Image 1 (cartoon, rainbow, N blue to C red):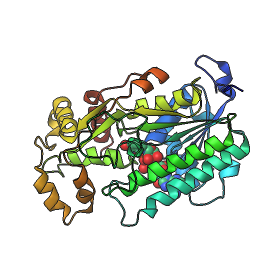
Image 2: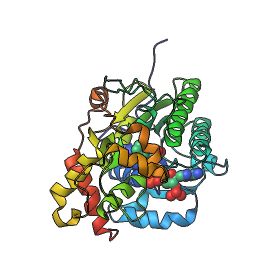
Image 3: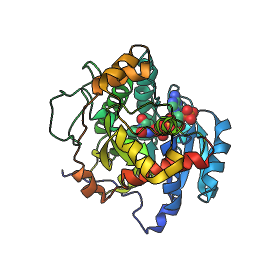
Length: 356
Ligand code: NDP
């Protein structure tokens, strides 16, 4: 029997969106709030999970500045506990599973990240399958693609590549995202063809922050603006605007592509100095403390002796992370906002929020 994709959740212009409910896990997060806006603006009902319902009102206030929040409600659930997930799935047509810890500094115990990421995926996916939810998008990362490969590799990375988790230098976060995506894919395959599953694998996320609860990627730009870095380490990673990440989540949920899609969502590879230059070029005085030079590798290695944040970056110094996401562009019909816009947009929002 050939593959029969389940119903597309609600394509553009389809009024039935008004009756479709999408559950967004970890709605208090930087990316998830943009996903909520994208789904509300596209006509869906949105239910967001928070670890503690006391956080719900601040999320509503943030979103209400940009969208009608009448079609928004909340459910309480933690990735590390079963409670709440079955109730959260009631009446849900599609899930965007974003909740997962994303710290700037790696913990000493990798399980602090791996456990919530993997167990959380198991809980959220299990509850979705059990409730008969038809469509599921898991937020993975380029962290599940790029890490642990030989330094001499020259071929650009694609959706076909996987992080090799048992290699030295692979961080706890990279491990957590890779194992969580592998778990999600295995469960989705087992659930069979009536369950449509895909992953969005974003690069490092820039673009406007909506409130002061900014998350780790915005923290990096915040520290650049505050003059906390004497220079930029020679680190490179794919970057992407948060508005594109949100759009990719919606498109992955609605796509008529077969289940199992893996969408590498990034505009371009960037060295950290490129981010600094984009800020200096567009922000003028606002970027006066942003470094305008690279740090020699030996300096970063010396700092790494006593700074755990620098230590995690040492194996990646000088590695240029080229990628080819032409498949994603074609499958989702997407173009991406360039770094020259996404980095200043984040910086401007941080300044406007009074954080700098
Ligand atoms: P944030 O830190 O802003 O958001 C993380 C979210 O996960 C928060 O809502 C947080 O809740 C929730 N969360 C963390 N631990 C738990 C838990 N035990 N139970 C329930 N919820 C939990 O990060 P981002 O928005 O940047 O990241 C969102 C997703 O995108 C993550 O899966 C991340 O790995 C992925 N990603 C991020 C990239 C980036 O550059 N930002 C790049 C690629 C992927 P609370 O508010 O209560 O802490």
